[in-house]
Length: 132
Image (cartoon, rainbow, N blue to C red; front, side, top):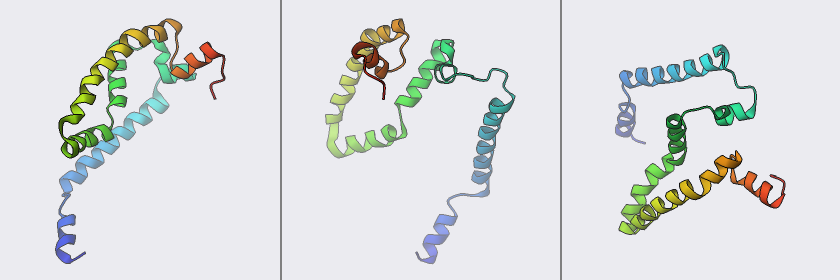
């Protein structure tokens, strides 16, 4: 690397960006410490930890599912896929709505009624096969 490239890299972040980044890390750490040590509603079982004891409202659960479904790879990969292969990717987007509707109206009611959390539990119930 020559001297000009090194100077360009060093100028990417100013002190303001480092302050904002440090504050972001401190706030995130503070939230984790607060809920880890001082929260009264500690989770004692895996059902409480993973499923919020089935007591969370619809909106936070929906946001959690959306956040886990839309990953950074999706956000970075979709524009690249469209750039490389054109509008053929739109077929995936069209089918996405049909698959989501089928999941919401065919599968989720069964999971909810049986109080199941994964397809592995369905496999265990239906075929009497151990989970792992």
